Image (tube, rainbow, N blue to C red; front, side, top):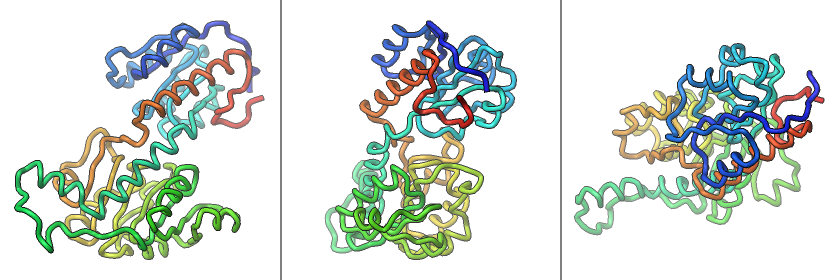
Length: 332
């Protein structure tokens, strides 16, 4: 890999509108160009942006594939991603071309865990349906059997993927009296399990079958793509719920819609979608699903912190140092 060298004032291209304070700081430190109207860039516009900068600052809405990276000029040396997830960037192609990739891990942990817990509370108690009933004027008053849902205390929460966010969700869920089982590639030490009050379930199918509520917190990889498919949905309890605030592709949406429409499972809470921003019209029509517009990281505090991490990564790189949030291995 090429050695890092100092760049006094790197040319930085930001693909989406960031918080004003973040953009102001970037403008002070770098030769920065911003997206004033916040319209997502087309592939052609991304190619043009990559052709005219030392550093590209993309977001999850930008697909930086192998073709775009191959067409980038030698000048582009850093992709400083705004956000933790990098599945929208072809990391292998970037590494092969000597382009460093950084991200902003950890800054959205509490925000995403809070939103996930909100869905865990919301969906079993049918708050979304109740809100729509009130808005429509259809509520006829209290009834002993009206709008019945399920309490969550004493239920089993199955967390698939137990990194920072999964752990943060477990801490919150424990306070609401949920029993927590988790699945990840490597089991936690017994002392950590005891501290968190969680139990390891190595068999993913068994976790799906045991859980009253399933919450997804794993990254999107070839192994986790559609990790919840028709076969696994068939293992779920009929009164179970599924929550996804991670990546839409973790769930086979067609299989999920079939299960929700048929009453095979009790409901779902989704903050992410396979083809977002497009949402399947079938999902929009299903009453027992709560749909949110990818709000997991949508706090002033989190978005500001992510911007500051991007700035820090660019500054370290421009000073000739390896950024703390480097994604790729092999740099010296």
